[in-house]
Image (cartoon, rainbow, N blue to C red):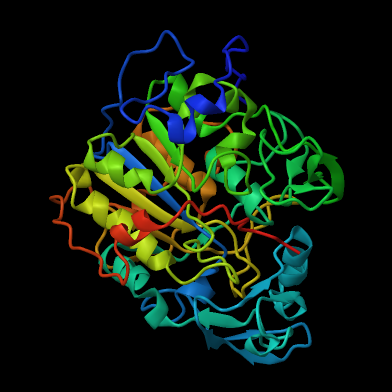
Length: 454
């Protein structure tokens, strides 16, 4: 494990100086004082900007069922050995599925992948809109609801072997997306394994700005959950490496403060340091940054609950939201130097038929989709290379000449199978979508608690 290098003497910025009030014309200073002043490292590829768009709670079988050349199935097995036909459901279906770690264990069923009929179901609205609990997880999204995703996948590279690194819900999954782990401290045997919660069940918990009464369960090397801790960690993240090497970054989130999807808020040395000013909200600020020539070298884009694809929470606008970000970058001066990675943070309880490799008590999780969009991405290609969230981190490290986090990025394959850097950069073709960026810019800041796992 790399030595923890954040300077303890850095003064914390107050919230008035970050987020919505941060100066949009500059990036926050690095805590590293001796490195070269550069915005990117001239690497061996033409990529100078990596944009990671994070959506929510879908498996590959659920979202890209029937995609040509991809590994999907139309039926699954349940724990009684019966065959269940996967049903077509709308993206904005009004029910959610359990996706705590215990649900993962039951779904996995010692590698048989036949426990999805045990998934608990929560209905929003009329009960008549919910399928029977024993079959609710066996479903795929209607293609007409996700046409932009299919256009992106058909035009660029779709990966059908990306596995969520963790075996749990959003909070630990988002920690893996920035750290390659959810350990509560560097070298700790304990990993955060669930969403953070408050004793009074108050939403928006997770991170150093959580209520003092908040906690998150952890899991040990033997797979036992318990030992709750405050959801604020002194653990390495990709933001530390970017700061150390003066590579610019931004993290776009729907609102400020704590939250299950606000991963950077849970990294104490970043939250209490000046570079936390690179955490900005609302997420639509990426449109202004692209238009005004301020796209960071590395950017994470987090959705609102409605835009997120999260079952029971989304209103179905997620594909348009992603398309609007992709279209903004595609029409900008950044297109020829950018790689966009679109992925989903966890399985959300949905059925998938491919068993993951088990490394330990909390790794790996089930397959989730990933689309790689770039003028250098392979055209109409399905990558069957095995990836995990550390693969995206390794891609960032290699692109900008960073050292390894020495977490799960060390074992992960990089994303090289998705690219052909020998080709001329292709001209961007606009992704067709029902809603444009103007629609999202008109929306009020959405503070809905996005993930009430059960």
